[in-house]
Image (tube, rainbow, N blue to C red; front, side, top):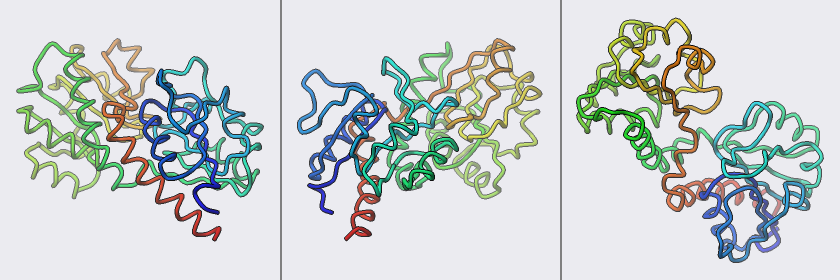
Amino acid sequence: MSWDKLVIAIVGGDRREQEIARCAVAAGAQVRAHGFPWPDEGIAGVTRAADVCEALAGADIALFPIPGIAPDGALFAPQSAQRIIPGRDSLAGMRKPAHIILGWADPKLKAHCESLGIAVHEYEWDEDLMLLRGPAIVEGMLRVLIENTDITIHKSRICLVGQGTIGSLATRTLVALGAHVHVAARNAVQRAGAYAAGAEPHELGELADVLPGTDIVIASVPARVLDRDLLERIPKHALLVDLAAPPGGFDRDTVQTLGLKFVWARGLGSRAPITVGRSQWSGIRRRIEAILKERA
């Protein structure tokens, strides 16, 4: 199968998906779209579907967003009027052998796809793509910090939990802005990297001693590291920001109970939708080309 015979459905997302749709059309594919913000002028070569079933009907490949799926199975689609849940009936309408390319799939979606013979390709943790969209995420994080605090980042006391690809970029940026940055991570190499960047490194077991002196706590690890015992040690004035995919790094129920100021900063890549959309497309295209090669 060649690109011009390929039907791609793009479902959910934000303005990044607009750019992904343009890239898919430029590659020669037939493109349908549903669930992301639609520009007034439309998108040349893209058919706007009325619902998820119409978008997926006859599609060879479905593209779902990078941000994680909600507990009820809904795709990330912050500006959609309705929750978009790709159920078995809508998925069954895809043309076999079908493929879904997305950030990551939850067990329910994987079960539907397995029973229908649909292949799932996840790329949330592709390091090259995370680095490409990393600057936009860090810029979005800075916006969140500025909009939700009454202090400067400069000289503020910040604790970063997690030091993966995005966490390490955030550390370097915050240190460069003059913040007093403490980093808690399981991995000794990551802690050494934080030290080299100018931050104070800590093992996760030291968080109980670090958190009482913080103004801002940022989590970038998708595991509930910050439980009630640790959250009770955070000052009431502090801002909590979760950069992680679901389930997130904070126990959000306890955060609410304690009345702490919290922002779950999902989808920060939307800060620069053209730049990030194109970077995502580079990973998506690589996977589609592999699929086409297998079919040849």
